Amino acid sequence: MYKTHIITAVLVAGYVLGLFSNGHAQAAKPNVLLILVDDMGYSDLGCYGGEISTPNINSLADKGLRYSHFYNSARCVPTRAAILSGYYAQQINRDSVLDVEGGADETRPRWARLLPTYLKRAGYRSYHSGKWHIDGKPLENGFDQSFDRADSSRFFSPLRLPEVKKKDEDQSGFYATTAIADHTIEFLQDHQETHSTEPFFSFVAFTAPHFPLQALPEDIERVGDRYQVGWDVIREQRWARLNESGLIKKADLSAVEYDLGPPYSYPDQIKLLGKDELTLPKKWASLSESQKAFQQMKMTLHAAMIERVDIEVGRILQQLKSMHSYEDTVIFFLSDNGASAEIMVRGDGHDPEAAPGSAGSYLCLGPGWSTVSNTPFRKHKTWTHEGGSCTPFIVHWPEQIAQLGELRETPGHVIDIVPTILDLAGVKPAKQKVPFPGVSLLPSFTKELGEKRTLWWSHKGNHALRDGEWKVVKVNEGEWELYNLDKDRAETKNLAVQHPELLTSLIQKWKEQVAQIRRIKEM
Image 1 (cartoon, rainbow, N blue to C red):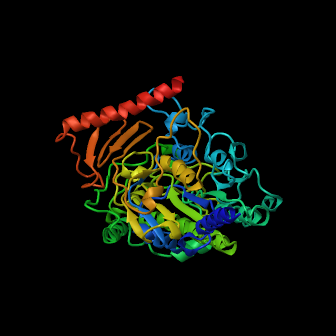
Image 2: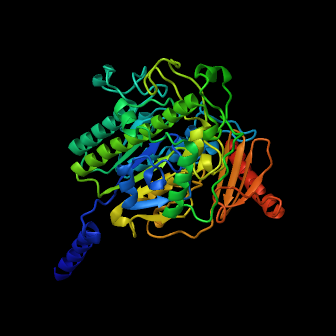
Image 3: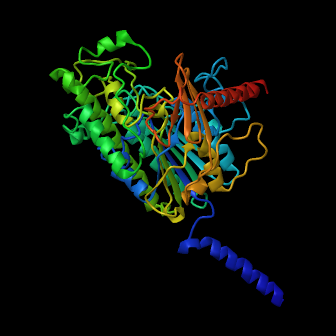
């Protein structure tokens, strides 16, 4: 009897200790909030050197971690496939490489399940709000509730809104960024009312600031004349703040690539935008006054869209606090690729008489301001240079992060999202047909990880591989380039000629990954 009491006391003490580690009551499994934005560059956020006002997102960085070497797949479809599956998009038919077919119209193999299906085994409920851009439907892939913002051609008055409630049938006052947050909050409120004892995974996929550049009038007004000084001045200011913050070390600001325009040519569509549209990033002083006014407005809209995202993120964070889940929720914030140099017209077309930013207007950021958004890097969305593939990554979990507000130089990639969240949830997948290529970043929450990593890219003929501090990269039929990212983050000094053997070795590693993808296709 006496021994039984001792055993019971020890078990209870261990249980209480687990609940009250760090002096606070904690859920056995943390909630997870994953916030994804679309086409936002490395230096757009205030906490990454930008002049755009993002106080709510900045607060996550102040009490969390900012990663300076975090990568995506350079385009929305492959990045989203990687975020929710844990695989390179080419491994699961969602992108192509060389002769291996794949893309947005292809279907994942059955073994490539999405994150919510793994989490369900650990008792999680999963919610999705916003852009999908993955094969299948959210509710078919483990999500318990979804607001699928299927119409990405319009921020106002969408034509398609599947899986929404009656209140959205009245389109007056609809704005996509706010609607995505509304449904996120609604799902969280329902979770609190009916499933409060279960942990949740909330995937919030904002479509801003992806084109069309459409913003609420009050957000446009708030930005004001901030960009009247032009893109050359704004880029230099961002570069100075990046240096001061320590986010970019041992790097030179990349030269503006004045000959690099949109990755796809739509000359007939561009004509619709008028004589003030520019397909190349000319020096600001060389622009006419009407061109300056037109280009200034485009960055004003881009900033207004990001500031609205920040406002809506603040509302979601307030909801977490009101349901006493804020401290028990791990929050991730990232972008699906770098800023876009694309210029095109889709949806309802472009009315030159419509107010810029309104439903009748269809503007894109273009290469001039995209160069600024991706400061200090080269190139844009679609390319696998740092400008297209490296973007902000913020982790907020104050009670489990050693030093709040620190920077992390530990390299990470969107293929690491699934392993990291499964690690947080205590889920160990059964033996997999194809092992995850990524790793859990959970150890980096407390310290820098010194392990050497190899990361791989390919999109639309743009190829790259990073191995430790070295990176090889090429553009379509161009020559392979070689950079030392420890000394040259902005890829300004091509060392291919100086290190031919290393170049050959890294290219061979890139090819070995392609060979592995071919073997997967044959399974």
